[in-house]
Length: 81
Length: 146
Image 1 (cartoon, rainbow over the protein chains, first blue to last red):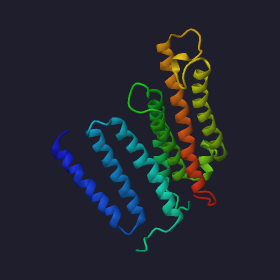
Image 2 (image 1 turned 90 degrees about the vertical axis):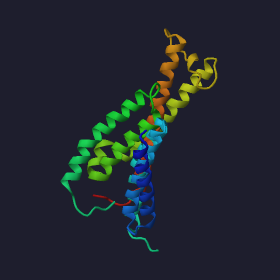
Image 3 (image 1 turned 45 degrees about the horizontal axis):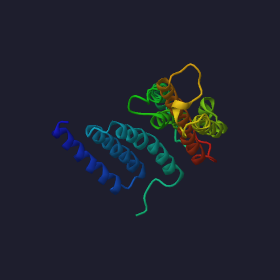
Image 4 (image 1 turned 135 degrees about the horizontal axis):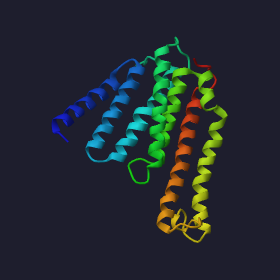
C-alpha cells in the first residue's frame, strides 16, 4: 500500500481513539469507536488480512455500534467524571 | 428505546439500505468456502440489516420482519444443522465433521466436501443472525421504543 495513505490512516486512528476517550458525550464516544474500528479494518486489509479486516468491519463498526447506542439510551448520555 | 421524533429521512434511508446489506450477507454466506468471509461474517451482516430496521423504525414495523419469539427457534435450528451434519458424518464411519463420509448417494468425495462445508456455513450463519438479534431484543425489552 502507499505509505503516505497508511500514515494518514494511522494519524486518524490515534485522533479517533483519543477523542473517544476524552469526550464528555457518550454518543460521540460510541461513534468515534466505530470510526476507530473501521480504520482498523482498513489497516488490516492493507496488511493483507482480508478475512480479519472483513470481520472487524462487520462486527466492530456495525453490530457493536448499534448495541452501544442501545446501552447509551438505556442509561445516561453524559459522563459523570 | 425512546425516540425524540419520527424522521422520514431515517426511515426511508434504512428501508433503502437494509435489503442490499441482506443480499450481500447471503452472498458472503454462500461464497464463504472459496472466498473471504463465511458463516460468521455473513450472519453478522444479516443481523446488521435486521438491527438497522429495528433501530430506525421501531417495534411495530420491525415485528413484521422478524418476530421476537422467532429468534430462539432459529438459533436452535442453526446449531442443530451444524451438529447433525457433523454427527451424520461420524455415524457414517468418519470423524466428526468429516464431510467426505456424508451419506449422500451419487456424489464423489470432492463434491461431498464442497457441499458439506456449505451446509455448515448455512447453519452457522443462521445461529449468528438469530443470536445477535436476540441480544438486541433482550436489551431493549420493557421499553416500547419509537
